[in-house]
Structures are given as structure tokens and as C-alpha cells.
View 1 (cartoon, rainbow, N blue to C red):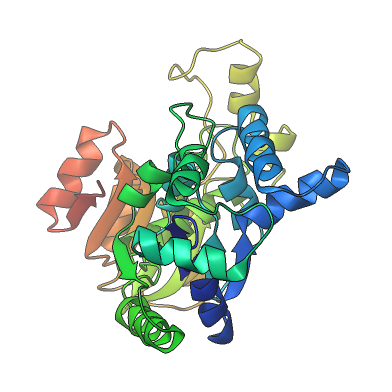
View 2: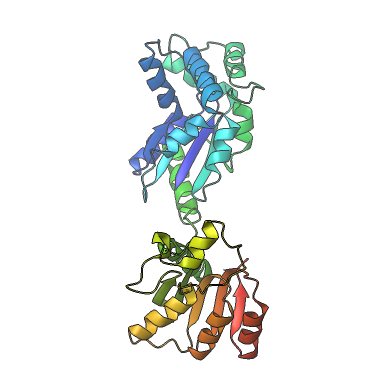
Length: 335
């Protein structure tokens, strides 16, 4: 999971991040990304320079540039904490992930000022007016600048930090417990899982027509795969093995108007033949194919005892579709 933290000046964002770091979250600070840029440019690291450099980076690389850089640092299977998020476009990019949660750390204005005065940093505001003036710099109408208030409004959870560190720790631990399982990546359903594999299988296609892939599944196990291409030990279509495809791509014949036979086997045909070659029964299996089968492949599917065909794209062969229907083979087109 990735927890994004936003909030106003001295609300406790860094403390929240520190707590999560102790829970083995990897910390990526958008401000640190900007600090690196300032160091590279040999500029002094001040709050004003951080704001100016952040705005400059967004103008040059897009409003979500810092979020893109932060995501490049994410380690698969680990939890992360992103801090210093100050632009809505950053949030929008991160929200495309199912494992992202934006939280706002909030605290009353007088409490925040008290914290600021206690830490006594040279450039920090000393009055409520100075604090408000500082925060106004983070609320521009420029889409490439900081828009902290808009970001805060995009948070799904508000964590109030108006008391002790111990209470904030308890709140953060509860937050992680409440969300850790909700934010896991969703697994594809079985149809999409197998169709994605069929899409990968079709990349082995050696035919110069459109690539197609098919897999045969039984009890949720793949028993055979196939793609369209030349038979075994026959020169590939992509190497000039199929005269018809060569003639079509040279412009000698039109697509769909053929006087020569095609030497390639179709994806569904190959998947059935491969199962037979390996002595595997296809009875009562399901065939996933990137295109609905043609008439010839439909006949093979029926005779192979396949009970269902799941396709991604409808191929214009009404006869093949009608044969499947008459034989009681279920045909589904994935949406």
C-alpha cells in the first residue's frame, strides 16, 4: 500500500511519516526530491526556494512530475509513505492505483503555531498572521503550482493530531490496520486472466495476417496453447513461406480476394492439434481465443469436444458461429 500524507504547516505530517517508517514503510518525500534539485543547482535550501523549485519542475515536466518520480522509487510488495504532496495532479495520478490512500493530518491553527514557536526555527512564522501569509504561498490558482487546500479536500481520511505523540501513533496504527487489506491490488477474474495469456501467446504468431492466440483450459488449468502460423518444419510466412500472404503484401492481390491457399494454421486449430499431439483430451474444456473462430476452426472445436468458447473480438463468420450454436457449444464475447 502507499499512504500519501498531506496537511498544513506543523500539523504533524513528518511525525506521521516517522511513525509509519517504524512500521517498515519506505518514505519518499516530494520535498526531498525538490531538495535534490536545489543541491544540484547549488541553491540554498529554504522554504521559499523549495516552493519556487517545485513550481518550476511542474511547469517543465507537468503538474504530476513529482508523483511520477516518486512512483519510480516504489518497490513491489512493500509499503510506502509519500509526503509533501501539494498539487491535485499529483493526487490524481496516484489515485489511479488501487493501493493508494491519501490522508490529511490536521491540527487546530493555535496548536500548530505553538509547535512552530517551540521548535524556534529562524525562518518560521511567529504570529498567526505570518503563519497564514506563509500558507497562502501554497494555495495558488496556477495548475502547475502548489494548491494545498485542493489537495487536502481530496484526502479520503482525516487524522486529527491535536494531542500527544502516543495518541497519533495509535491512530496511525489503527489506520493501517483498517486499510491494509482494502488497498491490495485486485486480481483479474478467470476470464481476463486466461484471455491475457492468449494475448501473450499470439505474439509468437509467424503469419503476416493479424496475430491471433488461443489457449485451451480445463479445470482452470491450461492444457494447450496455439497461435496462427506455418506448420512445423515449414518456412514461416514472415520469411516468405506463404505465397498468398507474400502476394497480398506486394499488392498483387487484394485482401479477402484469394486465388491461392494459405499455408498457415489458425490459433484455435493449433491449440487443438497440440493437445492431440501431446495426448491430452480436450473433452469438456474451454477455449479462449482473441478472435471468434472461423468455420473450419468451429468444426474442429465441435469435434474436439470443447464445451465453451470465450473470445475477445467477434470475427465476421456467421457460419462458424451458427455451427457452434447448433452443436451446443457456448460462445461468449468478453466485454
